[in-house]
Image 1 (cartoon, helix red, strand yellow):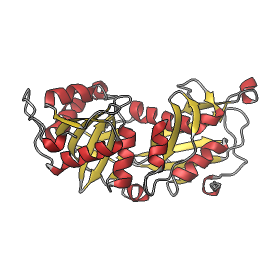
Image 2: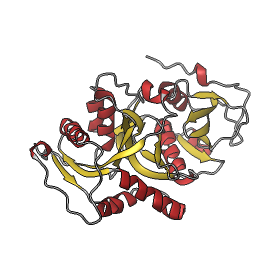
Image 3: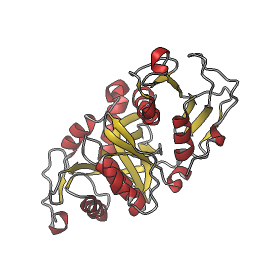
Length: 330
């Protein structure tokens, strides 16, 4: 069914400073904890925003925004021959152009980069975050770990609230994780897996991207409506997908957890002592585990097992993890 973009349209008299492109959209997205101005004449971007961010946008009125983003066609020959899309932040182009058909994924990837590199006062980690009963589960995102598919399963099948599938945003002074609910990015075989989840809304599939086939799963409406509610960290789980592997859960010491999660921090060094203390505080509150699994079903069962133990204190500095029980291995 075609997606109406009427909520995102603005006056077609508006013009970008980068060429004479009639603006299809010029709106401010309120995606806590940020306000993002988005301008683009590309229908693919407008349709993506209308599908995945209903109710989050309003016409720009000159107010302060954290990020001023434009997704515009390339100029010159590339506007007509194998047309490309360009991503600009504050008028500066930080990336090479992509095929215009990939303008919507480019917006999501570019916004991830903005948050990771330009978020002031927050510690940003490459991790999925979900919440239940006020307690957050953080899943740092090593490539190929399957965190996004697992995140989609937990939110659609297990009733967890989505804070983010890609970026854990920690307020280091308060020690809480801030919601930044956006579409869940899935790729390749995971697209069909998630499409089968009850209640999932999967947008178009984009082919031949740098990640293969990609699609975006709409954030559940309940998670969007609670975007102002932070959560306390309770579990840090390092997922590790290995095809056909048996389910295995291992405890992780704080030393190991700090080392691993530091590799997924975008700005810990820039945050200095505050970032270091914030990360230590997160781990002090959390029970840390490594989860190896060979299927989404096993991964969900593993998360249930970990959370059933409660948000126990993590293993002490250099402590030895307890041997996993029968429920920890399939």
